[in-house]
Length: 143
Image 1: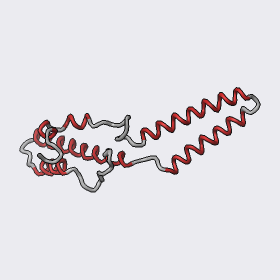
Image 2: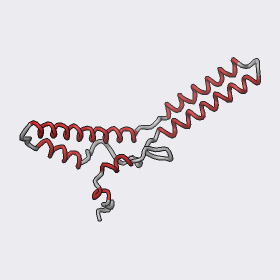
Image 3: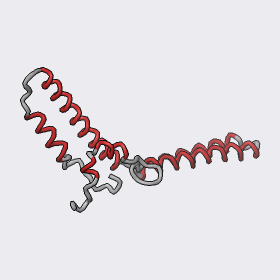
Image 4: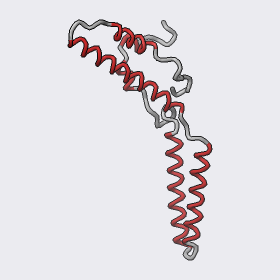
């Protein structure tokens, strides 16, 4: 997800196979039917969570949004400067404080616009906890 090479088109084959297998089972009694419903619900939740993660990983703050944010900040800075034009010290303090706020807000927006990359990113620890230990030891090249 951090490298943006996942799409919504191919579903997770392991989850889909598990869902199909669970649905194909014929429960013998009420407890098995309840267990089957819960398993199907959990698998659908996992598929939906995967879809949501992919959507979030591909979202970004577009140039139009950035232009609007910066233009709005600039207009507000000009308005503050005009309102405080009679007192230079108050004007300088107000403009400095608001400019600092704009800079910090822009930094936060930029940092969180890519949630799976960078220093402050969503890490996969929770997902790795649900992977069975034998799958976690398999190397990416299949050996």
